[in-house]
Length: 215
Length: 196
Image (tube, rainbow over all chains, first blue to last red):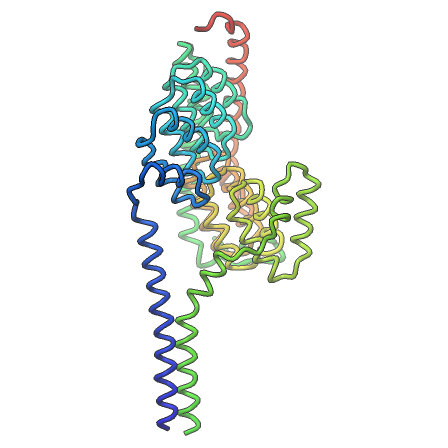
């Protein structure tokens, strides 16, 4: 019996050891995720080239320590980063600091047209709108023409065109967009009520190929 | 004695397995199941290369295919995520883990086309979770096109017809966007040289 008790205690100890190791690992990971390390210039340069998205983002957040010319170059390079938060930060800083520079306008235009993330595209678009560069007119027209942009982005592009050109050509669009959004809001409430009343009664009906059993 | 031995062994094994599970889960999250060449082929610009790559995934064993499809949903490229979602809709429509993942993608994926594909995939499942996820998308998605698709998927899954009016209004807004675009195209053509 003693032998088995000893074995049990041993197994509990081994299990406990692995559990504690796991918790320590989690705590370390959490700490690494949360703490932003103060970087030297060399650390920023190294961080900007890192394949770790968090290191790149930390380096971008401290990029103001680098000389101006190097900063803009690094921000333009960060527009190609694979992670969307990195590109979004790069677009925001470029727009704030370098929106008057042709190279920055070219980079922002490219991001506004081609970036796969809609938030990055919109941030780049807004940065260009603030720059006063005439490229924004063509870009806004391209957004309106695009089949990929969400309707909400098109509405904002049209409103911007109206403002920049002093014309009012998108009133119908704004009105019908608002009407459609209101219809979607009403519909979601209708569905919320319906599902609230019927959820417990719904059963999958293989023959009908849908849920049945609602009132 | 025999019973005590069995009980103690069972308890010890249960404890160890409980401690080990998170590590296994973590490994599943981070382990790479997709070879680089396959990943490149899945995101190729050439549709026939993408189709061949998708066929490769479909030819895998059930377990491997599931791991690969779930991993591909975390790819940075929207086209790859859409392809993965399409494959999940085709092969894992009855899998609770896959449906939960699709529901999560519907609320978190930044690309409206990917979310639209997720709506289509959820519309083909037989899981109550899908109804909740679709209602969430209808209520909160930033894209009207996704909200429209979610409404029509809810109609289809339940045999109701609540969404027709809203779909018509979204179509009207899209038409108005096309009209605004044409208005501006004409205006640009007439004024291009004069703009400062």
